[in-house]
Image (tube, rainbow, N blue to C red; front, top):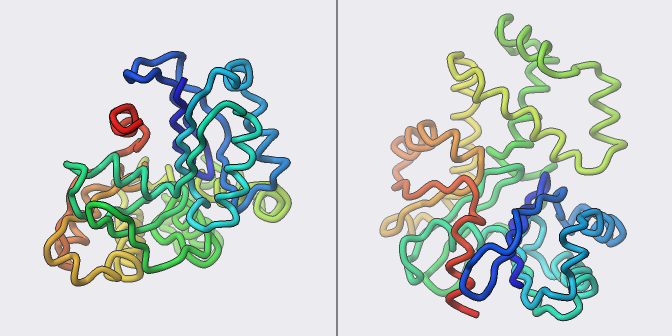
Length: 286
């Protein structure tokens, strides 16, 4: 049994297939497994809550894990140790989520491209056809993650409290979410995964795209992301496309294309769920 995992900070999707890519059980979903945020104890607890994963743990021969928070050595090795303990007979590989986005969006294995993730968090890398190159090390949701779900959630909450929302939008926002200040602070400062909590607000933008306010909010976030991340690869952008993965990017395709035209880069493919493109890649390369 081969397990292929695509994990953000909000959720993790686990696919189980045989060596020919045939599905062995229904997709398993657990909470997100970001080792840069969660403790070792929490990582174990989250995985062990899945009866399907634990009951089949001895049958697993390979685990290919792609996740948020796995771009630096210490968090990556922490999660690798956890997975090796839970799946004792498996060969385990843990990689950053950007690599999953690369394999899911490129048109050919040796295609060079700039690849962006816009989901709960955000990131951007250059793939030269063989290796991944990252010019900015992520410092996480507090300092970075422009144009991500948590970025937009923070902007929406701030605009609500600073009275920057149009009145009709503010009424709709307040009706959809609990905007009590104590409730918000409790979730941000006393609950795990505050980045995922912030990202839960981002859906509002796509339900209210009839508002000039939300369109401008989406586009400004993309501009900030493009200036800070995509434009790190100015030379490469002259010859390669920019692919996008993640739910925020998928639902903001129109705005991304408009910003790309403004800033002079070529948009390539969009993939909402990178995991869907990983099965053929791994079964062909065992």
